[in-house]
Image (cartoon, rainbow over all chains, first blue to last red; front, side):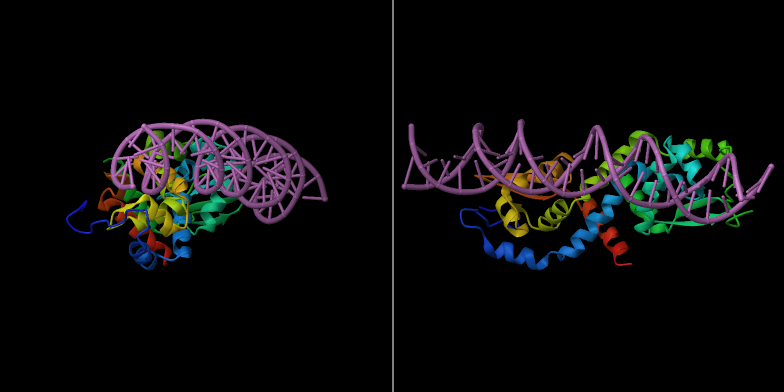
Length: 121
Length: 121
DNA sequence: CAAACAGTTGAACAACCATTCAACCGTTAA
DNA sequence: TTAACGGTTGAATGGTTGTTCAACTGTTTG
């Protein structure tokens, strides 16, 4: 009673198929990795932060200009910038009264690019 | 007063630098794309869903076995499976009383792989 | 048919989180 | 020094969301 030619699932769930379960438990990443992974993606899972990342891509921008570009308050943007900072996704440089933000590295661009491909089917 | 050799930011924020802002507004993805992108990442931004994706990678698994592997209730897992289904990240096949889930395609694996690289610095 | 099981679903609850608001810090210019 | 501005921060608020619980569907078996 195989569903696929290979890797036939064997669980009938009346009595849980412990072989499969134990095998999966061994093969899966440990909990801390799973949390790190989902925490990482969580950063991208907000449209404000996503917009900020696009805005500061290439050209550094100060908080006021980011806020004006997104149509948001400085405060709201600053809160999200803090989260992006703590995740090491962006860097900043102070210049007088201004703080200019830009992407930390190209890795971020790569991941968003891959996601964009997927979305466009 | 340039911060970088190239792409010197010109905004002083007393009067917003509208050239930069208007340029960014033109270059940025439209709002629907930004929402689609962040919604996509939102799916991965939960450790339960992330765990499910790893569990059903390679070998199809029924809901009970997934639940047992993760140490969660069938109901909680089923709720998350629904979200993953609606995002077309997973497919399922019914077999008697069981429903076996597996990854929809390799695209998902790629994205998670890229994120794993980034996390490990 | 009836009982048992796999899985789904909706409502309720709790935890989380993004934005707002007000107060604050540091820098610059008068 | 004082006022103005860019930016940050903490508390409060409202909306979102994951899990629980109970009820339900559909399939299999006695």
